[in-house]
View 1 (cartoon, rainbow, N blue to C red):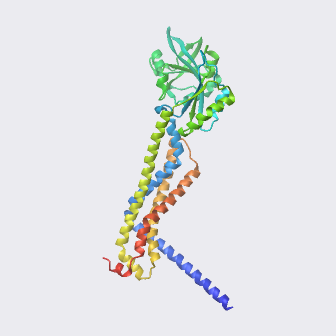
View 2: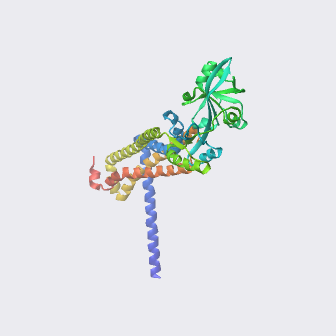
View 3: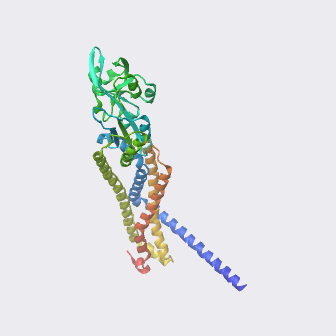
Length: 415
């Protein structure tokens, strides 16, 4: 019986100590938060720095792949670094092989490939307009051709999948050809051209970064060209566009085996713009380094700012620390109060940064027309909170230790 009463007394004493410790911890946290709110103007700068760093980190990491893909879409200005050109070499006076439809379909299924297109060509084609004869290069293409080379319509429209499927008698002309025959872009739209005794209506003028190389070209739907144009070539050249430059190497390596699995690969060559690709990778690496260095520097400066503010707070509140110790506050109480103040600042900044980061992600998603996985944002959110705790502990640890180790008498006498 005595042993039972003793165990019950020990249990109640233990529960009482736990309750007192939890109550003291809640009091310390409440005091810390109140102290931060009272001196919020002092923390505005570091809160802004950490919030902006966190927002930048979340936005860049969450939208990183979509930004990279969007950047790759504009690489034609640097030589089309993500476009691979497999082709069949000429053997003697002619090319013995060309790309079959099933081969192009299989190439499009390679991981990392965005679009694949083939083209048929008739060099030195002619047309007549108002009793004058004009020469040009005639090319039959599908709708993917525009996407592969990032072409757009300088005037009118580019023919689409429906036009290709129907074998429509429409065409797109290059800028120089439109100027030579009709005197300008706008004047070309709707005009009728005769090619091999067939009439075609001009629906658009080619535009885009690389459109100047095709200024003297006329484009027909590939189905129309094969059915109605005499002496037109087979598609001996194809163009494969990769999602990012990281995909170029693996895709280029997979092309020969894919071609060989669908047809003869005799005379196949794979042309890759390796030098422009390396240049683009180098540029993006430096840009990424600058962005992440800026974010890291912002967070580190925010942490140093908190450290300086906390050190100043310890000095300015020396008499307060001494008074609390004289009234019975433990060293741990003083230590956790200052540490919680530091954590309160960093967590507040991190939460603000997460909100700003969410706004940034939504804005970038709208601008790029892409939606990143929500799971990735959640990972970045957790990473931001963890990093805030690390900064808070790192910046507040030494000032907290210094405050907790003050001698009562010296602290009370401090002026």
